[in-house]
Length: 406
Image (cartoon, rainbow, N blue to C red; front, side, top):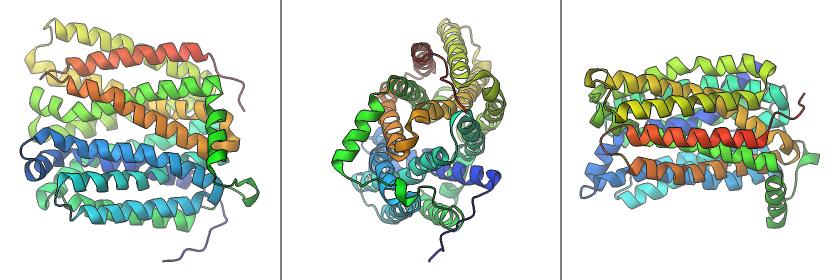
């Protein structure tokens, strides 16, 4: 199918919706797979059911590795061609995964799917930076995140419906359909935002110079570190959500409903952030939310550890705290991406790639020990959130206030 390249810029509402879907395809590919893990383990790894969790990790690692390629490639070849290639890889890997007859093969195709799926996320950030900067970029990112958060809200429920109606392999058919629809929308509506004059040759030497330039800016490095801590907290939460809600708290088949409810309840945080960021600034908002979460998680950890949470209230207490975690994400991720990208407009693709890849892959390193520490209670997750939030707050203090922005 051939699409003539559009030249008319998208309206703000459609642009936000499109960018949200480009980011959300990754979250959907992760969260909708959670209900399938027990069946994947039973079919492909019956002697070690826990290995099924690697299906999520393989996708995330592919996503992180892919960003290192997709970002610089978009600086050289333009935004549109890279999204097309990435979505083609995503769809073809989904088709190959349908026939995977071993866990190793499935992990390979999930890695490839994450690699291709990294293109819309990475290039979407670069496109946003091409068109906006400063607090306006943060505001657009906040609206984007508000729409984006609705997708992971329903993803586990969609996954459960599909798996119950057919089987876990049918999820890959869903991914293929989603990839084709999103790719067609992007190619038919989004103009190229990187002019021919602004493109740079795709060479190892130039990429190395871009890496050096990105990591030579102190504030960028600190904000990438804080983003890593925040994403690590989120990855740890997602990886432990099902065992905590189902095994520790007895949610059973209602787990997707709890997951959906908490993300919907927390979604107005992004809208509120879009209003507050123009008055208070990005750094101040991020610092406040991490400080509040560090205090809240510490108190909850002590109360739970002391046995003061009645069994009848446990699932609702954890649910309420989970809402605060997702609200914190609504305030922080858009602002942190904008803060890290602000000095990198001239290398937006490379900058977006490095920010996404480093924060993603290191976040897995932070999340794995928290997930492995699961002991039948929410305590390791809550304690990990307290520590990561405290470190993130200290990082924001080290970075200092916003620089003058437009």
